[in-house]
Every structure is written in C-alpha cells, then in structure tokens.
Image (tube, rainbow, N blue to C red; front, side, top):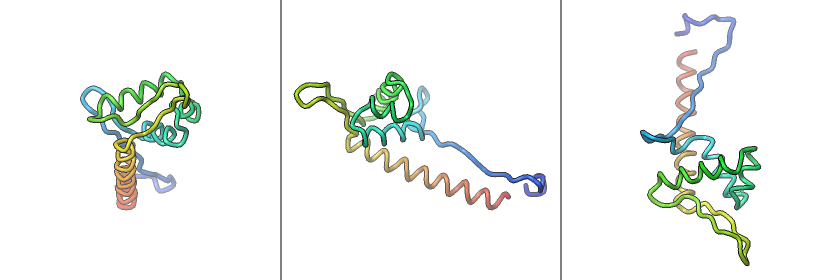
Amino acid sequence: MKNLLRPDLTFRLTGRLWIESADDRFMGIGRLELLRHIQEQGSISRAAQEMEMSYKRAWDLVSSLNAQSARPLVLTQAGGKRGGGTVVTAEGEALIAAFEGLQARFQAFLAAEAERLF
C-alpha cells in the first residue's frame, strides 16, 4: 500500500467500534461516555448536560441499554426524602470495563496496522 500513497501526505488509519444487534446499537463510544458521566454525576440529567446532550436523548440511550441487556445497567430512583438519583449497576460497571478493554485492543490493532501499511 505504501507505493499507492503520495509521499508528501501524512495518512492515518481510523475506525470506530460498536456492538450492535440486528435492530439497534447496543454499545459504542458515546454510550460509554454517557455511562461514565452517570457514574460520576449520579444523574442522567447532569450527565446529559456534561455531554451537551438533551435529557430525552440521554434517557433514550439509557432505556436502549437497559432493554438490550439481561439485567439493568442503570437504575433510577425518583425523588423523595433522599432526593432520587441514578446509579450504574455492577453489570453496567462490568460493561464499561469490558468495552474499555475492547476499545483499547481495537486501538492497538489500528496502530499496528497503520505501522504496517504506512
């Protein structure tokens, strides 16, 4: 491939990684970021604000994640004496760790292939 590329240009190899079912996207870098923000903020609303995303979009993504998983990844509690909030469950934390590992291996693959190609 090196012979096919102009030597005066710099090239890079990029890609994005998603886990999808036939009907919907399950996990990707955006959903990973949303789950991390929910962990940090304890709130879907605050997580959405941090990402400059509408609350409805964030809620739809959380609903999609929960609907496609065997057990809930995010739990919400309505207000009351304790004030409500949102938590990422142990299953959600396991998904975050697994996808981060997958993402790291994917980036390492891209770097190795870029080295080989360019």
